[in-house]
Image (tube, rainbow, N blue to C red; front, side):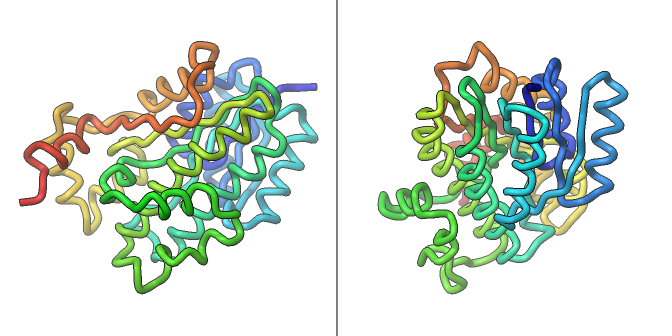
Length: 275
């Protein structure tokens, strides 16, 4: 049986992580869009990786279950890279909650049922989750542990509670971090690990759209005024993921690694802090 790494979201970050951890594994690339997954398969295939492609909608239990069936027909699922999502500039509130929050919870639940012993997963969250004001302990626990199909019914997620798409995105990404922490307990009972990475502005086609969109000025200000003074690259996210998914990271699980060039530091204590 082959060892399979499943990639959900075949864009720049998913590909960068795959290149770091996919050697010697069968890489199952999945995405909502056929053109995305085919492009990723060409790039990785030309670099010597063994790949298969399929489509997935992470907001659909049936679709994620079908993805797992494809993966298990190839071999043992030893790795999960969940890099799919929508942004606050490109999707309405409902879509953000269904894809970024519910979809991540669904992926963690279903893959947590099949991940192989010794396996590992990484979820791409966001710096935005770290800039959401503190929630109550009860709200944190609800986001972390509410059964997946009851998650979107939580009071905190109702229309009168969500101000705008950015707020929906921040709550979703905070939820991703909390969900990973809680799911690490269940994954650990299978001998597997799972962690999150919360990147800042990473230069990808999606980020370039953001930089040229209605929030572009704010993004450029973040880049200019953060301690690093620049945006990040997908390969830098891949470096962190390689640690978390590899043999040097076997004592790390249930964690969320913020890598934003210091943007959050500047929002809390520096020049980006609200006046």
